[in-house]
Amino acid sequence: MSGQKAVQNGKAFESKIFAILNQIPGVSVIKDIPYPSIYSAYSTKHKTKMEFRAENISLTYETLDSQGNKVSKTRCFNTLNIECKYQEDSGTTDEKYPLVYENALISDAEATLFVYQDPLKNIKRGALEFMYDKALNSGERLIVMDFDSFLANVNQQYSLVLSSDELEQGSELFMVNHPGLKALEAFSRKRFKTEINKSGHCVEYFDEYLHCQRMFHNFIAKHGVQSRDYMPYLSNLRTLRKGIVECLAKQ
Image: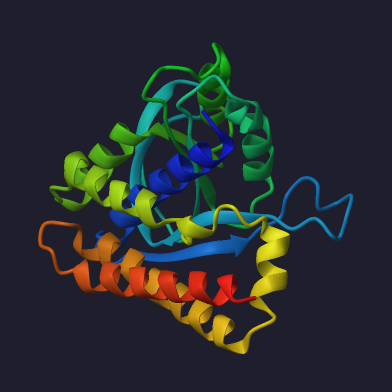
């Protein structure tokens, strides 16, 4: 899988988690929040962001009791960091698991939920076993679930009926439109920033595009794709992309 495709799949997976979180009553969700990493102690320049933080969320998970026996426990977390990992090929995603575990131990949140999806069973042998074992012995600082288990957990906790198929539909739309500006893939990031800053008109188009894109993704996350009410967002995004392309072509 190409790097671009891997990023798109990862973002699509995040969109499904975001869609689930936004449909849980009473749960607040914060995106892209800074959090301390084990590397932060060695460099003040090291910046790390967590995909999501959920507030006031209940989960049922396995842990150890005071005698070291495995037990099932339901707990409401005031602050829960959520780390999402999607792996479709035999890449290096699973090599980052130890970092997730170490960061969970020093997190400023009450715990970290590690949600993963491995549709083709390509996660390296032992990697998931490592994570489940560390989670079990982490003193409830780390919780590990695959996507289906997380979805079932939320449905059971909150008496919801969230469908994996509907979430997949929203995910496909997210992939098509994220990270955006598909027509500009030929531009390197550096060249794009240089070119777009030459024209104030271009910047206006781009800012409006980003605003519209955020509204579109939030709409899909909250309402799904059962109706076609999202079409005005798509139409506006196409118009804005065309305007940006035309701006850059004139540079």
